[in-house]
Length: 253
Image (cartoon, rainbow, N blue to C red; front, side, top):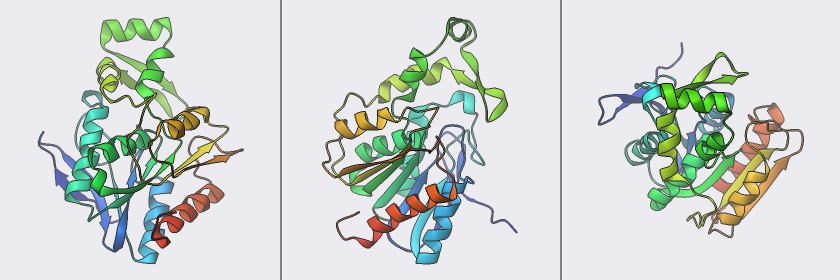
């Protein structure tokens, strides 16, 4: 029987679905990507590993994603940042190692700025920092017309036959959360994983992020044959080694 997630109420009347495992700190908090959810291979593999080690772990769905409430079309980067902060404040116990995948990497850096006392370190997997700005600059004329006339554009996706909506509200609100060219204010340890065959977020972006971070403890791990998701068994093992290294070292990593 699959365990049903717990629920955290939001001020807008919706709720956040999450799974929390008590254990030693610092905890590990997984932040998912855009249009993803907490049942993915990276999140569940991390949960299984943390539970086997007696380590605190939390995974959750942003509003409009997975089992959380809310309409995806109504929500923005700022809303998903608020969700992450709510989980940090009300669910996770003490400082956390944030593990952020794709958009979750962007969210992790934003959350660290908002709650520096709650973030012990960051592992960013193909971090899609400033993705709304990049999306806006890559729009073709037809997409721009649809956004202007309808307020949204259905973006084709190899993961979804029908595509998914990109709203003008999402792109406009994203401008409030841009981090580059920096500085990105976080002084704790950061590890970045990025596949060099990533067709969604260019691996060169991770170099820009590393240069912009105020922390001097920043390492980048490039996986030459890795894709955007980095969910193969060897990719997962690399992620677990980085998490283990952080948790077993008093200085982090």
